[in-house]
Amino acid sequence: MTTQQLIAEIQKKKSFLCIGLDVDLEKIPQHLLAEEDPIFEFNKAIIDATHHLCVAYKPNTAFYEAYGLKGWKSLEKTIQYLNQNHPEIFTIADAKRGDIGNTSRMYAKAFLEDLGFDSVTVAPYMGKDSVEPFLEFEDKHTILLALTSNEGAFDFQTKNIGGKEVYKHVLETSKSWKNSENLMYVVGATKAEYLAEIRTIIPNSFLLVPGVGAQGGNLQDVCKYGMNDSVGLLINSSRGIIYASNSENYAEAAAEKAKELQLEMSEILG
Image (cartoon, rainbow, N blue to C red; front, side, top):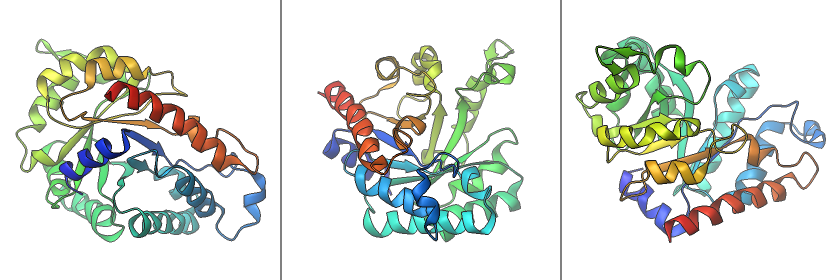
């Protein structure tokens, strides 16, 4: 998917909502456990109930890898279902990969080619040659971890080195990499006060912003400091939507929560 196609979908739906499909078998409605593939059945119902309210879905691959081959098959079925039924929706493999060149090339092939995701999250710690293999794929996107929403982000990301915080070094350096126009960046919603400065470094890039909802991030603040002329934001909510209810009407409850965010986004967009 091209950036322009994503922007068009945002404008059409009056939404920049991304829904995280982080499926934990201990949290899903118990009646689904009788299904042959409870993870996929859960995802399918969530997608069917919310696809008109969001522009992206983000499965965190750890929640699938934890269940071995069965979990991986559930992930594969989920992305196939999305690509076949809702190709207009942006898909994110939240895999947080990051390794040397040949290994990164295989990770990129796995997610962007074999599974057919539109994007994948990547850690920048190992530098250019670990990220550029992901950037080689046409109309695919690499979402670089820049400033995350967890407490440990302060261990490294905000440390001042040579008069500049590490996350700023990451942002500025990444702009020099080959095919850097295919980069997006992760900036946590709980770091909203940093967004104004981040926008001075990467004014035109899309930001994937987790942490709204269960982690306490504020949508209004994120938009105030992080929105650009093309919106430039994908606001992710996972637990706050998909686990809105653990009863048999869980999908309807998820849609209600998604609708609340979509309406708030529609008002912001005007």
